[in-house]
Length: 345
Image (cartoon, rainbow, N blue to C red; front, side):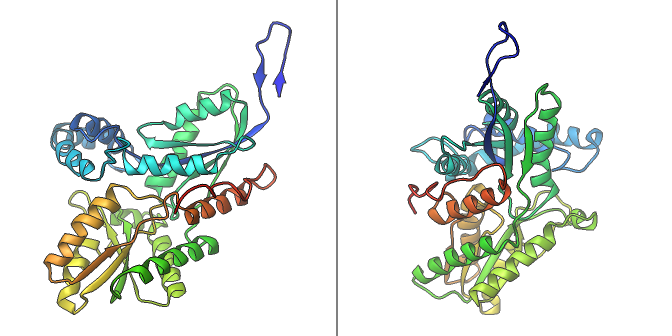
């Protein structure tokens, strides 16, 4: 409703509730220059690389940003949506937000790194009269490099806002029964549609340096519990692994690529791979798992490989997001049951 402080004061809208979905980020284009800008922002985040800037920045600028963008651009190009000219991650996040958005309870989306940015979306929401915002980082398992980094950006943005909105945040949902039930339901259906019966289901989570566990980050424990509880619901063997290593330091083990290359020698010839840490498919799932992981497993002697896609903006995925959002909006509002039903499976 409009507020008027005085006859000369411009009209101000206020009193609305909204939701901001966030995910990690993506370059604007699958080109070296766009990837360089993205990696510069991503790898300059002290939550991501926990080294003193005086040591890390010369390595980043003189080595990584002069070589890695060319390789990464090719990888992004292999999964880029040519028809809509965008990255899968941004497209899925946009579709999730659009599926949930209603006139009474608007839902917007932002990237931690890249566009649309968290500061821009928070400002736009406040300008639209949304002064109570649920920020929802779409990471089931908490990690300082993901969840905390997104919230850092939110809080730093608020520091520069004279009239701040009230903020709630979505906590990690790694052991939420609805998340686990929907994941198990989705995985079970996809397994039944495969032309083969897997000997093993691999739950591949994004890796983190081992030192993050030693410093007290709960991510490893969250991942292990998610994999165990999904396996119990499926009543099939589920093996926990970690992917996406970067640099020479030790990361959380076992490594997905090593496991995939070893399994055929151990007699495991048919596998299905899931990615429970990802709310949406992206470079790490579509290229690293479904392309390179498949090639590594088959080259090592495997017979059958299947990657089972993430929930994305499917009806099940939207049902999960609606459940999580409504739980955290208690007292503020609620998304209607119909939100998201128009999204195709």
